[in-house]
Image 1 (cartoon, rainbow, N blue to C red):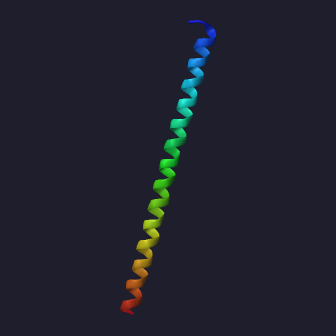
Image 2 (image 1 turned 90 degrees about the vertical axis):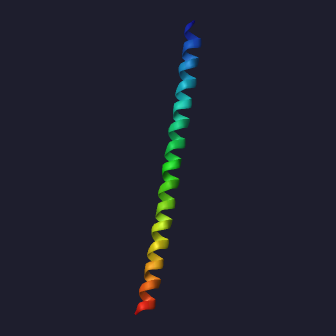
Image 3 (image 1 turned 135 degrees about the horizontal axis):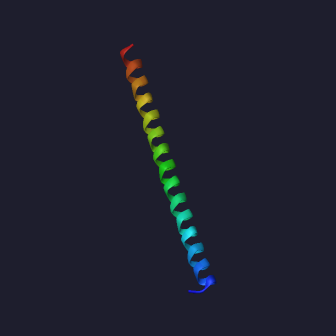
Length: 54
């Protein structure tokens, strides 16, 4: 293999690695948002139950 082919393969691999990393970070962020929404919903439900019992 010549030098430029090798550099091209390395460059493509680096781009694929960065894209995979960004995808994983977005998935984690979406999961955190989902969990935060569930937490808020549960807190609201708890407050409604507390208000009904008072």
